[in-house]
Image (cartoon, rainbow, N blue to C red; front, side):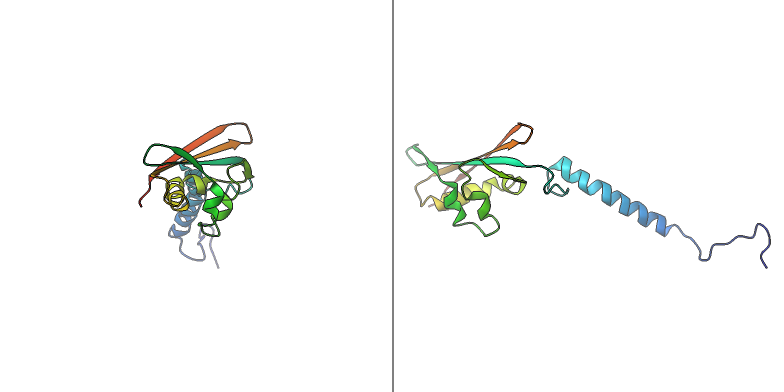
Length: 147
């Protein structure tokens, strides 16, 4: 029979559970926060807001003449998961997220070099993002085209 003041836990408690809970809580809070603050795409933002965007691709030949490159031309050379970003993107398009496109603009510029058929010596890509609140964000990238 147990005496008063003789209370014991069923199993020895060594603090491991507490450390595990703290680690899980930190992970659950810090990972999404890092994604939002670092613009790394780790936070869940799908369908949280929408954005309207447009791509402008400009090729410059060796004599300095500039010409437009249709983003739709890139859709035929892109992977199936990336093609929807390009088809019709010379006009404003609405979607939920363009972060994946924004962080890969240098790759888009190199893809535009290939899609231009060797005309361009250099390609510039301009991404315009129009947020639902009216804020405008522009991102640019350039690539030198190899022949």
